Length: 446
Image 1 (cartoon, rainbow, N blue to C red):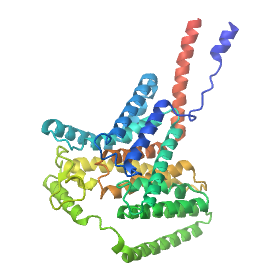
Image 2 (image 1 turned 45 degrees about the vertical axis):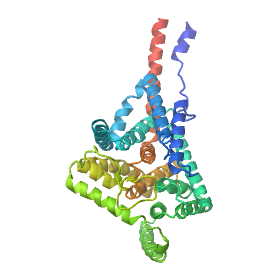
Image 3 (image 1 turned 135 degrees about the vertical axis):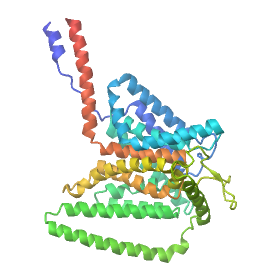
Image 4 (image 1 turned 90 degrees about the vertical axis):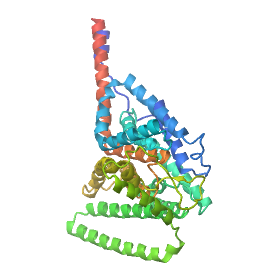
């Protein structure tokens, strides 16, 4: 009897939460890596263009996600309340996605429109809130985030390498915000000068090799963030506040000089830069603006094709059915203010949360740059620079690039949420499970 009593009251030591990934989490990482490989296309085999393989990564991502969700809901029902937190985090974007999905389904079912905006809406839900819930409810959230980060960086570096070997060829088109920022991770996270120099060279090479204007813009955004972040962190550690203020003023002056230098450099080399298909873009942009002006409240309700027949001239592609090449204009033209307002507010809410966490280091006087903060800065930069890329490319109107953009938002939100908070909730859930088991065991002994 004493032996049974000691077994009943003996405390159970919880296992570490961040040791290894579950099989289903590993499937999600593999699906994301496959999406990256399709979108970056380092070997220029254009699997994303072929009808048989175009949607393979998306199908695999949906299958892996459903398997994860089913496993969590069936065997870990205590995690269901976390879904409400995720919905509150993504509320504005979920409303936007619901509008897009509803209009697209109507377009397909009522008007038999094949090229709809359905995948744009599905990618928001699947890439953002669903992935965030999977990360927060994972048994090893930090390992899951780090594994996805390594996949992002690895595929991006492969893309940079292949584009360097085929210098001047346009690889990772529409993915500059992911590839360049991921290649710059040594610059963002590095603690030694050598590592940071490697990061600088990698992101410069990633911008110069394809010779895209959007790539150069993303490059400038990366350097601007690193300069400001480094300046604010270093001056925050200075105990002399007057000297710190003067150093910040000097940094601002250096920034102005750098801006002038960039302008002069642009004037000197602009004849060697690509024209960006200005005629084509201005024509499609004007069509989108006219549609928004004609129906500024709800646009076309996303119940129209996501591509238009371009008849101004023959383009160098396999089809004349082309997207607008501007996601913000597409949202305004097809969803009006009813789509644009929740989209903007939802995106600003998650970006502001990340901004608050990142800028804490500007006043906290903490000298260490953790890898967790470096990852958060990387995904924050991907989200911010992605806005620039999607202004001139159909990032959200392509299933692969759209899913990856919102996947980065989920990783950013997961890194904003303190890791200890997720571990404490998991320990509390385990404690509840153990307590109920102990109660069942005690009643059985009695």
